[in-house]
Length: 270
Image (cartoon, rainbow, N blue to C red; front, side, top):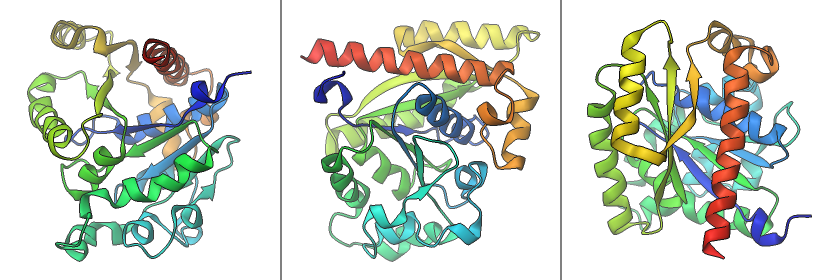
């Protein structure tokens, strides 16, 4: 049996300020895949659109308490947790109220640490081995809260022409957060998404990204896949909608790679 240090909670924020790069798809399916390989996962939906909540089959009627209530200090995070239909995967849902958090918190003390403070109880409880935070496609207070609370950032990167240019602002934000709010924040990895083997541009972008980030880029590449795109409309992760499709198999492989990296990191730190 794994020791307590091997099962210590890791908080990973899934972020990229660009929309349409596969953040929510990665959050849902990586969370599902991690649960499938035996991890205990809490997915926090930090996007006011609430797409991760919808994609896990948690409709508006089931979102009695949301991340908004937690960040505003109205509820402990445990009260906002919703069980999904997937063993080992829980959710803190989101709704449009989240879009008002930045204005409502104003200049309140520790406005950038609301999520970190809320997660203290989760760290003490020991019920989860991973927290995944799905961020909005912008570098606002919600994303800053996520990075201030996280151990590491996982960056989904679409295989398109301006992929590397789009990372500049994100990397600058990570450095700012590391310098002022969270010195332990690191890059867990970069995952290439929407890869199309029929398109030479995808291969070129993948090579450029690997040349720039080296070993930080996961070996696993997430292919462009119709079944993965269809799954959210049925309120299911792709791994439940169609386990055998190429996208589902890629996310299972990614989950194993994430776990291997984390074990290596812990062994090195020991």
